[in-house]
Amino acid sequence: MSPPEPGRAPGRAPGRASGRGRTTGLRPLEAADAAAVQAIYGPRAVRWLPRPPMDRRQAEAWLNRHLRDRPGPWRLVSWGVTAGTQDELIGVIRLIRRARYAAEISCILREDTWGRGHGTRAIRAVLPRAFDDLDLIILKARHHPANAPARRVLATTGFVLRDATPDLVTCLHTRGAWQAVTDPWSALLPG
Image (cartoon, rainbow, N blue to C red; front, side):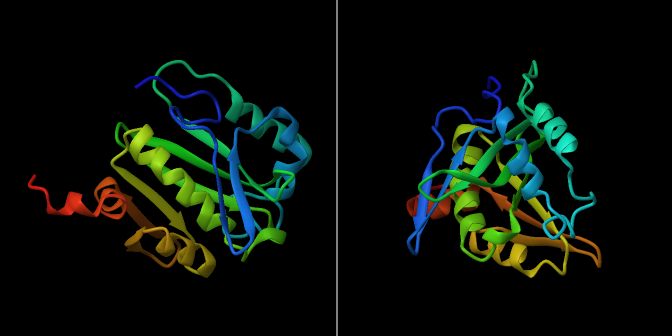
């Protein structure tokens, strides 16, 4: 499979999902997003991550790494998570390829948007891109055990617990589970 455009998976345009009167969308990241990325990776949002908050220079460098064209098979696909009618950038969701058919998914939102369903809707929007467009078989997500909202978002979007240590919880989602949700008849077919 050819690598997707930077910031976009092949085959699908960024989408919008809504729930309870709120709209969540995905769009490619842009170089002009540095201030928004800095706000997203703020002190409270990174407290469970192995990194400090970003300053403006770090946000610009982070964006440059995510926007760079890379030859060969894709390794990283990132989208901006947007909200509202103005498509305000409120988060980032990424797929990091770990093997031919496996990737790790991560999602981070600006703290003033927490608890409104944006993370759940963003992950739901990325699942068809991961399993259908990028032909992945397994997605892995990790979070800190004390991050209960992340646990709820992952459970709501179909991830199941794989492993838990005092420092890290690992959850998995598979293409088979995705097909069973999107096509219930597939579970009845042989093979």
